Length: 114
Image (cartoon, rainbow, N blue to C red; front, side, top):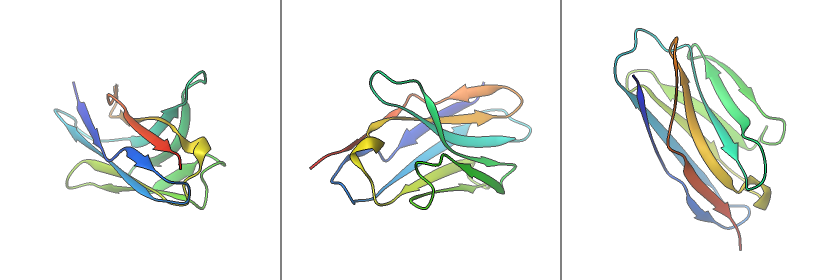
């Protein structure tokens, strides 16, 4: 079973930036995809960004041009650089990995508020 440890959430003012990190540890032959989802209060969990096979990226329309996902293959770590944050970005952000099986992180809170 692969474990994911997230970090980097917090409180930021509108227009600010945060960088989330997610490190994967455990037994895995290869990583098919790593990504970030988020869930706001009263809403369903949604895909934010995903990186497939270490190269192909996909973003939710709501974050295109503001968020950037990247991965360090040597460290089995995925990052989410979030710029120009808006109040509607407030949510718990979850890291996700597909290595044949699927694991989720515990979630990290991101709050965008003045």
